[in-house]
Image (cartoon, rainbow, N blue to C red):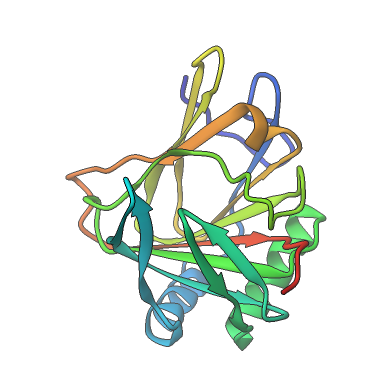
Length: 201
């Protein structure tokens, strides 16, 4: 099932809430933030432990927050860097649009369509339970999909340059999500996921 939605409409048929706000800034603003983040963020190749072996992923990541937050996923632990001015501006914009508050941001840099993210849910113990996760897209437009863990029903949409999506409620409990790879995508995409961390080191 492919759905395109205005803000306020839940894309999921049951067991969770996903709102797509579409483009929340002009192309000029989105281009500015895209170029700025591409050059200024402390990008590093992500690490994951798979079958007991530590590997580096093709995509690059960065972790920022209002405190030296600890965040553990895929068997690795990251400590948040201090907010940059641009990240604060984008966090405030996401908070105004979603009516939620966030204290950290995990950024992913996908260099092209060969890089994606497999089915998963964001249920790490460091995250606020059933808290909102706001996902901001800059750069290449990419397909984004959800799959119910039991019924296997799927919901997909295209995330536009400068667009915002929010997942909240029981979404992470009942749904998986992924960024499927595509040979047609040649441009990079920056994804910012604003989150609320509850455990402080």
